[in-house]
Amino acid sequence: MPIYAWAFAVALVVALVVTPLVILLANKTGAMDAPDARKVHKKPIPRIGGLAIYAGFMAAIIFVAARFGFDAESIKETVGLTLSGSLIVAVGLIDDYKNLPAKVKLLGQIIAAAVLVLIFDVRIDFVTDPFGDYIYLEWFALPATMFWLVGLTNTVNLIDGLDGLAAGVAAIASFTILLIALEQNFILVAIMTAALAGAAVGFLKYNFHPAQIFMGDTGSMFLGFMLAGISVTGAVKSVATIALIVPIFALGLPILDTTFAIVRRVRGGVPIFKPDKGHLHHRLLGVGFTQCQAVLLMYVISALFGLSAIALTAVSYQIAVLILFVVIVAIIYGVRKLGIARPVN
Image (tube, rainbow, N blue to C red):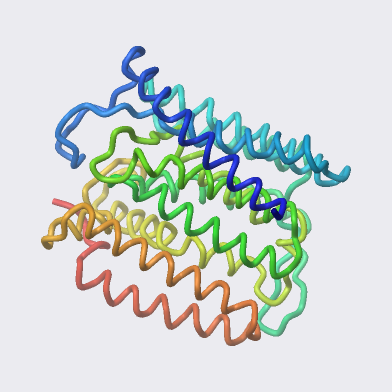
């Protein structure tokens, strides 16, 4: 069995086994998500399910490292990602219990990103222009990477609003990057995305509607941070023809939803971190979709983004930019119809 298949299988099994234990832990320690006017569930639900996702991912990485081994560079990148990811989990866990202020949570995300960038030197060193030439970021590399890590952490966090939504979207994004990594023979990236996908899918058994547990900020921030970190780790960041467009496509749905949330809140004169009921999933529920229908539709949209990302590896950079433009225009049209960018009353 290929090494990445082992990573997926171990993460899947561990997440399946650990999630019921996390449900018991949440019930005993009071880590419950109470319903309110913005949320769609009607009774308190355990909300530290991200611990099971984290456990599945870490178990898979440790198993693969022990059985197959990593080279020195891969060890450095793996330690950096797992250490900074663990810091994100710690911040999310505290938030799930104590409801941290947005600024404090953001500071925790920045610290985790700084550990990865400053200590382990995982950063976006360059991008490519539409003509395929390299643009070296030089001293912009650090803030650009920090923005990327913190930004994607929050995009997945913000889309976590329906049963199974964030876990499913993250799994689809992970599979997308996995397939591209295999095509490019980037084994470490394939292992990590396979582990992340396995953990998310294992957790999804308990998180799909009707959810027995939520992942909470512990899980959504971990998934977002790891997808962001993995996408700039190793050789994936050197795919010159598509640069950062692949992960942007793979996470296109949460990125666009977050972008429109920022626009909506700025237009409404409210803080950008203030929660509202204007996200795509809220609008879909508002026009008559059930939770399952809304989530499955968003899975389909995410899968289409993923297929587009895979297709980009076989075309020129110019065509990739054109495809991205067409997709964004089509989505903006749908957004206008649903009113996602309008302020929420």
